[in-house]
Length: 242
Image (cartoon, rainbow, N blue to C red; front, side, top):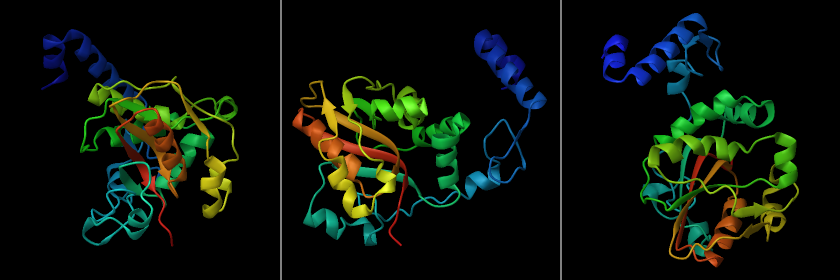
């Protein structure tokens, strides 16, 4: 349908579409990764298609690669408190650059692009609420925003499921990124407090990167102690051990 036809059937929508098209024509963007013209998009088509998506065959619990999508040995030996994990990308170049630009350079355009990627992910179960992994008050004040919240917004709108932003809190701990993998579970222990009743509810956790899974595991433990019957993770990128 043309812009003009759309404006006739829905004047408000047509006006927005026309305005966006004019803005894209007047202020075309360069691809964040290769600087080629990308219209109104953060990435050009070639760079978007070349992002490092995870293989289909991966552990349904923790999203690490496994033969025939079987549950990995680590999850069989010590099952985490969360029930399932979906990850879209491998945490490597260039997806790491997009995520780091969002977190540390306040490139909020990355949040919109990455959030729309999450919104296109098919979920096995419909959640009762969506919970972006909280930041501590100190970290939130330092950064000015929670990247997990920003990438969760498009998914919340697409599913029509509310974002829970006030009922779960995180105490200030040392940054997980600066710790050896084996120290992360100890660092995050008892880091979360949940002030809402989750009895019988399914919770979808949203985060940008899953490394060891320690943060998501501790958060899932806290939520299940408050009655959640199922906790699933949806993350943009999964770090893989080399």
